[in-house]
Picture (tube, rainbow, N blue to C red):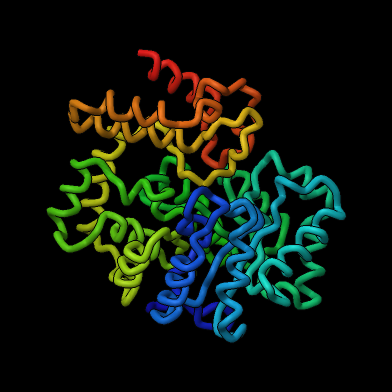
Length: 377
């Protein structure tokens, strides 16, 4: 397993993101046996970086992290979690959330701790509640080893953040799709210029780059028949010189084993392979509609709409349509109708809460209207 040196410690280049763990009946019902098996296999392969957050799996991810990792020596792995800035209402919440996270994770400290999802709409909260200052004190007291931030906004705002605060690392959404679309390249260069180590999230864009359209898959297979589409995306992110950790939210053992193979050792992307990626990206863009990563930050919806499920059904329909599947319409309209009525797009009342929370800046109420209209056709 390839590693990167961070302040004298070797950390695995592949990080295990605990946000898309296998579940039984729903997001909060983690299949703990299957998830534990994955954690054990990851550690056996050399993965020593585990990333969770207060809101992942409705709060169950941190609890699972505590359960799964407590059987290992604390010094043998790195644990990362995040302050849910979007839930902070007052300065006292910072202490409350942090203490709860330590208890959930069954730990006395976090190796890496982040201000979660920094964006323009949360800057006032960060300032008014003195989030950074409070976390800095936690670091000084030894409860945080390295303080960073995860980011979902423009390069211009990132420049202000890195000029105004001193962070040990920055975590950004970076993949070959968002390299230009979400201006990930500019964000990466800002961190690089400041000599701030880069932690990469969403290298597969919520799994979308592992589930490409048929044309894009064929392009990758033509270049390397034995490599999965996911491995191309992981290698793209990991090949960047300043990449310290590339997080992957893995759901099953097959995904884990594919990632382990990709990083043991990493084969950096070559110039010719970048052209292959560009070609596959062009094909994928034609078939991609709603740029959702299934992060679920939009949830829970006050009206009960299952936003990610509605979008996933619609995107799958559009991909099938692009591949000229004659059953695209009937199949996916039926899948939509199988959703509980209260979870369907038609329940959206356009309150806009989801729009404010979405890291991808998707105008979700507009898409709910479009999905409803598509369903009625």
